Image (cartoon, rainbow, N blue to C red; front, top):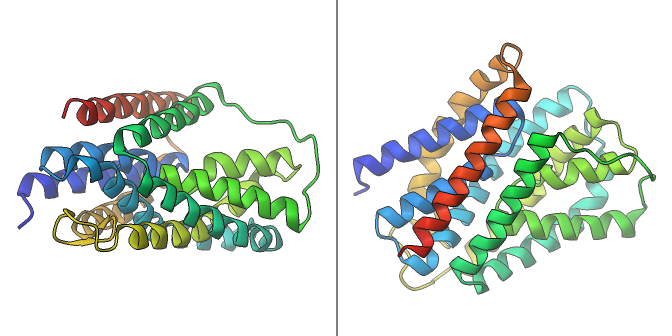
Length: 269
């Protein structure tokens, strides 16, 4: 049986992640990973696997949410499918390698990487940083290599990769609208490769809680998905009514606070 307070916490996590995903276009993983780490620690999951379970479960949520995001951007003709196709093989390789590396790294060391990445995302939001378009898109080898790097980092941080893919494509002289749409499409192979990697590397791992599929905790996944799917449309509607610049700074502060709490929960045990 899953404790009622844990179910309520999963619902709240999915609601917040879905709302801000619709409002700001950010991947829910930046919220899901630190909150699940705190929840999993509180319910007594094995300390050495807490972050791995949070990362795997977060990546699995992206597997579902990326499909709806991709469809929406495709409907607006904002996806550069040739670019997505050339990046996909590298992305799949990168995500599988990233998940394997994550499984080998202790939770506490992995948490340092995750928090560092969250600081990077928060600074991007607060400062509104975007690279200047100074070069053109490379061919197959260049896009494949970019896919490996983006996929590896995205898998380690359990995100859809938008914080990396969008700046990279803008740097390669892709229009921001198309860069965002193509990034949403690239998020699907990231989620596929990352989810398979976390299932494979966690399969048969001793000490995982009942309901785990490798490093994916299915009860949390189901509840978070329901809540996030319901709240994402509300966030999208509110995007046209709320001060987005102020909210981005508030959200960046939330990320930093959650990351600090996550570190405390890991290092205090």
